[in-house]
Image: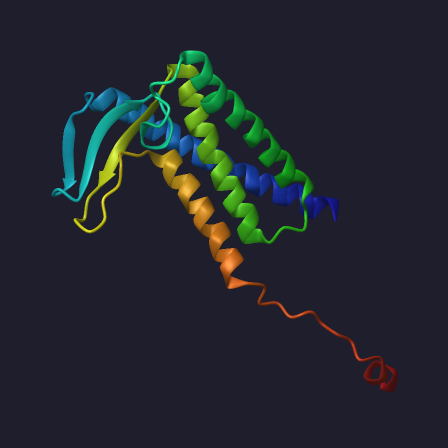
Length: 176
């Protein structure tokens, strides 16, 4: 049993590190290759690379707050929440695999954005989608990781538990 838990934690850690790594590598490339507010069309006007430095949270929420409040709400509090998430992932061994993967990708994305906020004072965002009927703000791979994780957890929640408990009929077992 201990070996399977070690394997589970190793695989989830690898997934988490993969999310952080992809995020940090892509942000590093964006910082080096894209000028601030430069717009580079990748797929006509539907997928554009545009680098911005976001000092706030989602859609720049909180970017006008005083530095101390912004640090507390956007760095310290999320660090505590991520720590609780890691602890929960390690200790809750009976979680469905889809939920574990979802939590790992959320934590990986969270670590990627917190790292930026602590190291650079802002989060580098650089991707934008616009399909007319659907348009996003400017985001990064950490945001994608977080949204994929949330999506996986919602999928698991709304798909319900398809596994039916096995009920052993004592009279049938006695016949064998």
